[in-house]
Image (cartoon, rainbow over all chains, first blue to last red):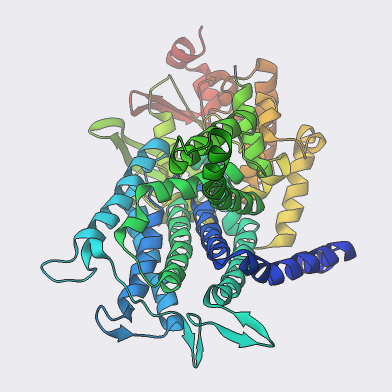
Length: 360
Length: 238
């Protein structure tokens, strides 16, 4: 009862602030579209990465289980969608049927990864999850013979966009004199999914389950002694994190219209983990900031590094890609030195890290 | 004869081929306060962990309230009324005193009861009441031990298992802890405590068991054990 009342007594100005943010997010794609549709696409990918980071945050931030193969669940979700909505097997199921299915399959894979690794911690767990991510990718790469399922490295193309009746997310349309291109439609859909995922994340954090994860992260023996079913809680973390990845994967598949194993390499797992760590493990808003930064800054650099060099030296000396990675690495190192708990750390995590560094 | 709340029958605990506990029998009656004393490495902690469901054991070797519970997972045993205060305290150091206590009531659903017990524990440990918003990691060793005991009490146990509550604490603090344990027992919680400080344990408890390299070598009335020559020589330093 009490929590309900608290939730409704949000101060007036906070309401106005939220309304302004909502308005800004609503007009954003049109502003971006005026610069170039590319930027709408980039924003969409950034939102997908926020979804992924929030999913991984459940595993890493809440439950404290280091997962280096998270992108595998994204891959599972993406391939489930691709296989059931493309000319590959000539199956064209509607998206509202496949997305939950993709989440479910990813969830099963999450349990599949979680079950044998229950007793592992820290570095050991990281290595197993890393291997798991690679196994999934290699399977996707090789399941083209003897029976062609995934089409191997060529990937699957001409994947159906989302469709509800006559409303097609892949096609541009004009409403009220505004041009809603495909990416703009997806943008609004992603925003809806994002809000739902954020709510689930926050509710989870403050629930009984969230507290159990916190205990588990702090001291596993003590957690068991106070009556927490640690096995179930760990599996739950893997399963929930994986299903979010699966949902994001399905949307990615439909949005891009083409997927191949190359989209799900180890670097992507590390990138998502970096977003979580950079933003602040365990803090939903921190993770969102981390994901936004790591999605947009490299894109900004991609568009500025070369012109800048031309202006400075008259020609491009270093490839933009190299500079990008260089600055990226530098930023991460600086972050770890200056704000080891992340940009917006969670209260508990900040205390944990401060305490560790104070140890003699 | 009072009903046995906890009964161990030929309890064995092995760590990959090495038997730490080699078949012990032990009974704790309802309302009793029992200690298990012995030297380092005698297998006391292993026995206690096995009772609490933290180590795998044969089903019939542990009975709680008449039912075999050997090998049942710890979380289920907490629900049945068995609470462990782990060795080395194991408080959640980044959570506050209040949050730690709340965690102790994890498996309970009766909010009003939990709130009342929370207050009762704070009344039992005035030090914790003064520091109820402080992080557990910043408490002194004695305070952490009190918090660990308080947290266990919040699961509303019938049987409280304590693993070396005196570990690493100053004598005065240890005496205080044992006073409180006695108080808890008087309030109707059955207690089984594993302890190296044999004198204090025997002085506080009604019954004692002496464990040596995985076996029970002596048991009986605590006062009698205090007077026993072998015990005096080996554990009381006389």
